Image (cartoon, rainbow, N blue to C red):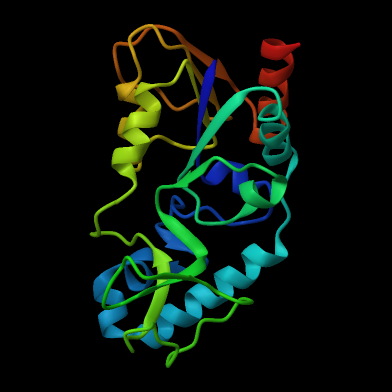
Length: 227
């Protein structure tokens, strides 16, 4: 059985990381459009760089939680593919290995000249003046608003191959990621784990809602489904 898991900000929030989209439109006190668009980078790259440095520092200080560990444990005996909207590395540090990052990885940098040139960042700080092998400034390896999502196509294939799709800690409001739920096969069960139980807006019937935070809901789902 191929288990495909789509995770969102809710699973990382329980590790102390603020969600990307708050109801007030702010992200750690910043308007997201001031720090998460190509225009913001062109206007004030120093501010954008500093913002992601602080967020990267927070990610490195955060620890995986019970939901991350439960998914990694599940993968020891089952085929588990994680598609995450999160840019942190908490899934990796919990022990999961099959992870597709839709929106990039904050622990990596990319060239401003060629986005295919991606590098690991040592520590939490990426500085102005740090350049790629072509001599161009490095920026955070993050998919900003207004940029294409390169990994959406491989994610689409994974979802279409799923025997079960588990959606954890996401409002299903951010596209194109939210649209992945609509692409599962007609008879594929969908499990939604989130305290707000976002509505799965399609005609597929087999949807189970678990009204819990990730740390409780994932364990509840695993125990009921695999024991």
